Length: 255
Image (cartoon, rainbow, N blue to C red; front, side, top):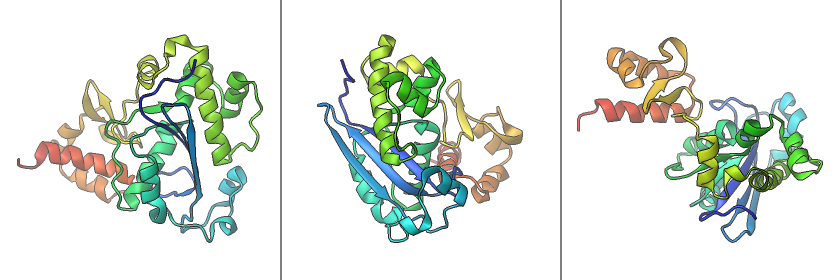
């Protein structure tokens, strides 16, 4: 048995200058795309972030400023990546909290719309942590009985993640063999924006930080309109600002 999918599933792994969605940049992207017929397609690119790579980050992934000085910027390859991901559900390891949010942020910085509408998000780490509580290397050893060579190489990590997902659906029959059954089993994220500044509570957008944590976003914006301006001028991710603006426009602009 293997995964039964009706649309492509793109497993994404990123290496970045750091982990701050608002300020850090992608320096390597690898995508392993699983097609409904079981075949795979791959894309890997080094990216020039147009800022220095901190030494602490280079120590993790091994990518240096010298290695990416002649690489294209994300904006230069954004349309190519968008086309490769067209019609795909998205997956990865910790992808719901990092890889997908960072990718969306880079598309927004590039001025290119990358719609998440209708896409399913399959985070292999979430499945793993629901079942076993381990790291990627341990997950690969546990599920695939292999040692993960070249850990923190984006392509190696993405390939290993796809292998783990295949092994998980075999090990846990309750997951089923489709993206829909997997997400029904482990649950989908309740975030409104990928930085999780806002989450869904009882079907309503709710602040998840600061003095208004636990309050409905629309209620706060109605009672304190300047809070919207403060967030839009603040050091929040572009995706957070985009979703906040959608809520503001939906609730307060005249129709």
